[in-house]
Image (cartoon, rainbow, N blue to C red; front, side, top):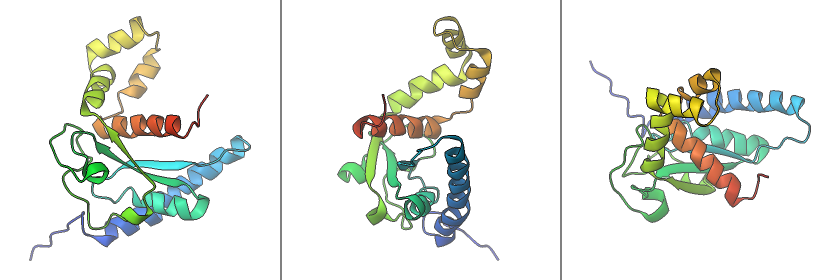
Length: 172
């Protein structure tokens, strides 16, 4: 017998992230809050992908009132404009809304261009980019190594968080 799990329709994917990832992030936030008085969790930002991870946002919204932010490629604006297309932000999904995505609980959708993620991937994950970051931007070797942990979807999530922070005027 063969069992095929469809992560885009499997409620276990949603529930697992709601319960495990959401609780883990709750503990991380609670710990950070003990170190910094007045810290407020404003949003959980995640590419939609199979819609498992974004379920952690549902947990954080219930616990702290955080907004839920779905990230998608501008070249494939399914949630933004009911559109479709090709993109290179690997691992974030495209051309459909997963059955398990609680879209009614999503507060914002942020589009990120794959040109942005491709460019930052070159900086973060290739020797020429590392040299540029060290020699021309003054980053330490440890900082450059840390950036190499970002893949396309991680870069997209960070860019979306920055766009949201600017939109909500959360930064300096």
